[in-house]
Image (tube, rainbow, N blue to C red; front, side, top):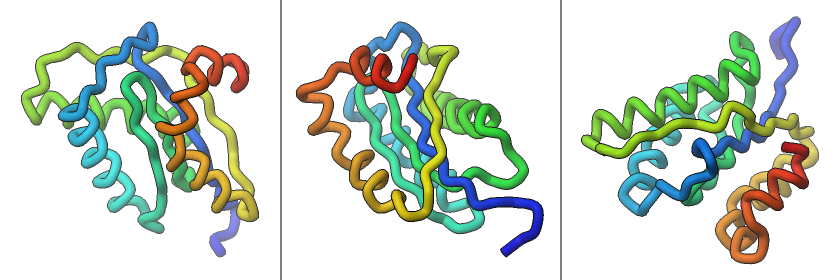
Length: 136
């Protein structure tokens, strides 16, 4: 293990400005590839995510050279750039606030499962209610 750096697994939740439901199936495929490409380039190549029509959940190990804020902005910029490269004509703005929390090693499996079940969860729980629960 490297000295001076802990392995910090981070669960990020960020959403479109005004929580607009702008991610359709074609957008989601492009965003999926952008996030997969990001995960492939990080050191341990591990992470999971869920893309819904107006927000994204992402679980990755925080790179040692980044703050949580830098990680969130990096992912958001990658997504916007990939959508533009693929010819998407929509406008994508992100909510200023996002949620982030660290995930302990012994909770990784259950957190990953939670993220992978987001579509099911949001059939009963609105994004607004979820964000209220997360303190946003």
